[in-house]
Image 1 (cartoon, helix red, strand yellow):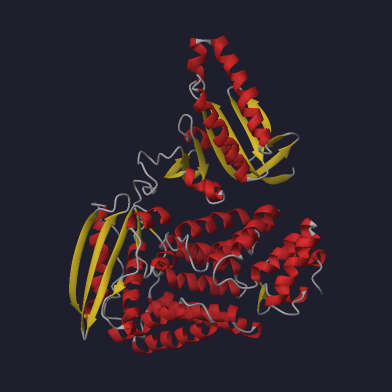
Image 2 (image 1 turned 120 degrees about the vertical axis):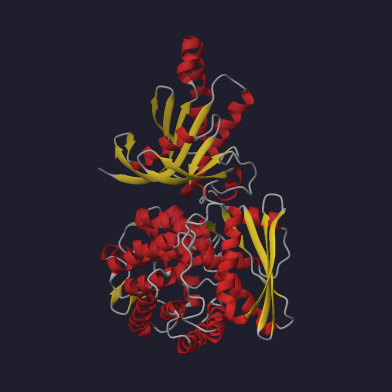
Length: 577
């Protein structure tokens, strides 16, 4: 049977059975009026189709998520203003549907119906994929946290009006059983700009330590560092990142000693909840970071004695000099250019020379090899991937529980053509640290390579949620566009690629898919414009080169079906052979 991706809206009357018992005739008349005067016109106005009526319920589908949400908001707002006897619950999701004549079936329908049951009376409940796709309307909805959805496992839900599991206010977005935190970049107050990397390193390790706590939702380093050097009220930051708690602090280093101050604030009102100062010898740095993470976690959740602690990397496997090299390398790694990557590589190698059992240095060095494969000549890619596997394998041997090691190994295997093994390693990275945005992103990228676009969308949505201000956001959006392209949803793929092209650090890759999207859509004018932009960045770029970009050495990163469709669409767009 044919399938398609659709936005699905399920609605049901609140307390219908009780209303019928009290006044059967009046209730039926009110239901008919609701459908004819409010529900059906709103669905039609926003381009939707009422699929079927089910007693006091209804099912509708839309070609776009935004239209479904706008229709639902219009219905609920009109019913609230009328103050009538009937109120609706509405659930909305995006999913595959199976077409059977005018009817639709499938998991997407089941999810929408389950979400409707979890909506507040007079309210709307949506899935994360909907919330992340509705732009400005997202401010209308509040995170209701993770919920067990019958027959479908655990899902993160969003509700309108803004009531999040009994918590009021946009800043209180996390589930009550999973607190959320953002660690802001610690300030360097040493008076020495050369020590900036040291403050960044303290922040980085705190994020890593807290991220290992599976009960805690931790905003990714990349998004947290978007606030570096900015004086912004913690309440505003909490709202923008969707977290409850904000951790901030400073580092002062003098000779062989340093002082770290840290404070924890409630993002909803800015009140300071906890603060401490630590004076230590430089040799205590790992123990200090673990101590700080534990104390903060203990403030948020009293039952922390059972939480897995970071393995004792504190001293035996790397000395302070190795740690210095490692943190300096990270400082260069996050600047995302070929020259900076080469500097990071040299410093990671120096860290390994001084700390031969420093697993994170091996893992990050493997990651640098992968990045250099993308940024450097295509002829070097196969060798880069093999070297990344070698280095990441060493990291895993040293510390099998290091998610960054699993990430690098998974990406190396994937780029070498071992997709299944790569996906297994990337799943392990996500399991070790569910707050690891890059692991979710890499897993999504790998899943698109085997045409598992629904799973890929789930993972890339998680990456975007964990790191909404990531400096590599263009790659997140690009991978989401690829998943939509595979699914045949050209409208969403087009929107994501155009959003990717507005992000910092973007390269030419989104233009290649945008050209293909326009070619398949038959939009010759927009195709010509995209080709001009593409060839401005990559003069003389051809279809053959575009296909080659989907290879790492001899290994294709996508299926034959995808590459054949991609080539056809590029030719349709008019890109030269």
